Amino acid sequence: EDSFIGRVAVVTLGSAEVGSPAQAKLRDEHGQTHYVMVEPDNKGVVINAGSSVVLVSRNGAIFKAILNVNAALVD
Image (cartoon, rainbow, N blue to C red; front, top):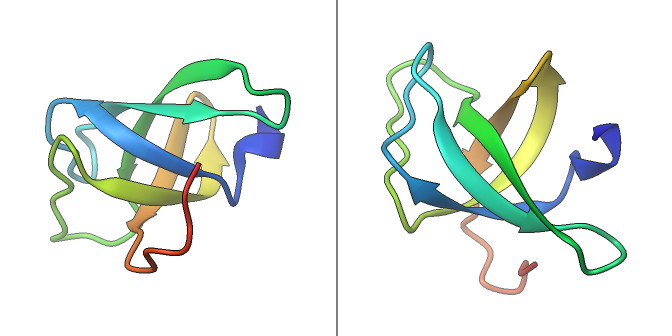
């Protein structure tokens, strides 16, 4: 799962806040789909369902994410 860092994911269920993760979907380097729990890297940020994010770190089963503002980055 550490290879997921740097990948683009899409939040599929819920809204993510620090301390309250949401489900996101991503594809690995083999094209396999994975569902992970994500929360924002920064306090005060809310990431809603449908948002594209970049996974930036991992703490146990939870991945920290930032909003993907670059349309060229896709999964």
